[in-house]
Length: 317
Image 1 (cartoon, rainbow, N blue to C red):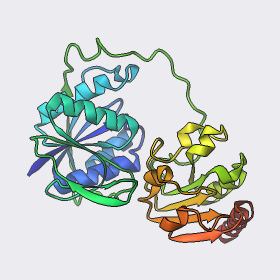
Image 2 (tube, rainbow, N blue to C red):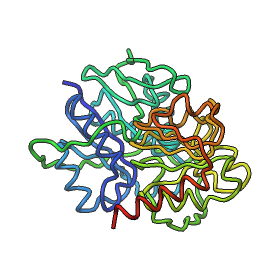
Image 3 (cartoon, rainbow, N blue to C red):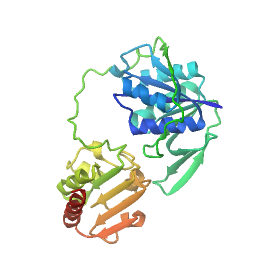
Image 4 (cartoon, rainbow, N blue to C red):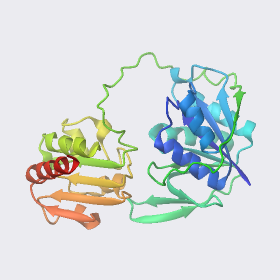
């Protein structure tokens, strides 16, 4: 049976859905261990036990967040050695991908990114070429490193909870000496909306909003959704770049993706084509977005979105 190590960076008070997905996949592959950075609080620890975690590995240093991702990759390499893991799972975030790449170099391991499913034998399934194809890949190295997209599977706890023991892992002496240190942080004000990368519903606006994201925001709030945007909208300064979905932005895979005023060029498709249901609203009936949409509305988003918002609010009472 394979030994699987899941990396969870700063678990927080409660584990994110994406972390629970990683734990569910790990359990289907073999024995699950977790390497975590930061404080492990009671609710998060209980979730790890409920999802079948056999062992916990934490770094001997408590200041890894004061650096960029280099020391975290070094910690994870040490945790792989301590746990004898043959599979490592991380989030498919920008940091997760960089950590995976650095870990692959340290271990001489095969790295597979943008994974949407994993077979019990470790074969990974991923979307490529802007979602035009689904491919399978399997690392032939002793250790494989996979980054898994959020919303790929439904999290399922184990039949029986475990009581994992915590092991402290010593970092290499040079883990932080050559790493850039973070000297200051400015917290982004919380919007109250879900995180874009993990949201089950995303409402995205593009060039067609013409600088006015009001209808997009109102519909998103009515649905409890995250807000996304095309590159054209972020480049124009209408919304922050952290909302960009696409090849040079974030990759999302929600249950529902509503595209408003977005043409659906290949760059945009690359970031959202694995959504379970795609609804497109665009005045141009020839827009490429309609080629991949499950439902399409040819119309003015400034008329369609407010009507949808009003109807949703009525149904919610």
